[in-house]
Length: 325
Image (cartoon, rainbow, N blue to C red; front, side):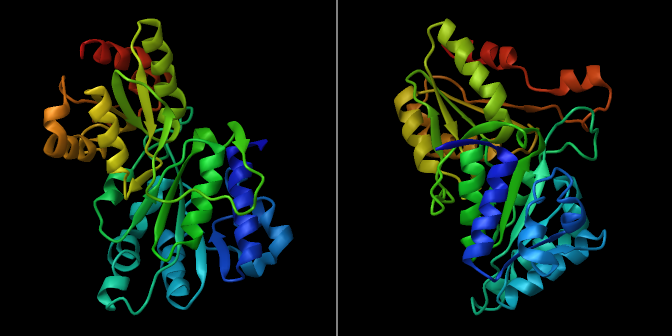
């Protein structure tokens, strides 16, 4: 094991997969010239040249459209979206092309491509550069969606996404890029898509989360709960589509309580799908109503004080958990 940042982990994944498979290439705005807006591609141009590390025009429609075409032609493109917020600019290419052509061509063609989409709250990035939008894309059949919370999963899930024959949206929280963690040195290390991870075992309440929200808010909730004698089982979902239903149901069978926490807006968020599934398939296991926590139904504010009020509070989540007993 070695300790590296989330950003370095994604660079390692790209380098290892580009060395392993010559059909893998990366494209996006300022990838070769700048190394990506968060520096997550900075080592790639010198290693692989501008044929495989391609700068593009400022056009998400062109980027995703070209990536779909390249994937259909036998390549494995990795396209960077700069900010996840901009993915609706290329909505037709994502919803009607990338997600559907495999089915519309009678499975004669696969679409092995990855969209890397930096998402989430950072300091005062405001309404157009701060959103968590996984719930929008989770509604579209034909897409796989991952959202790692730590450097090891960042590397392992990106490698799996690149190798997958299906289109994968890889959400990477901007606030995680500088965080550090242990990552296996084995170049064959990968994390399977569709498998959650028990971040901390417990017996009294199941908390399900992912991405930066798990890394900060939920891990703090675990500590607060322990001080009150409440044992939290914290599940890192890691993959949104397909999500690890079996792991969640098994945990709920043990704890009899479920709390879902995500940074995305609560209204219409993916937490509602998890809650509905547990209610449909395991209502008899529950000793308390399911709790959901998410952002308010409002755009992300710019003002620092309002942004702080918008963020999820571990204390507020703990107050909800306390009422479950």
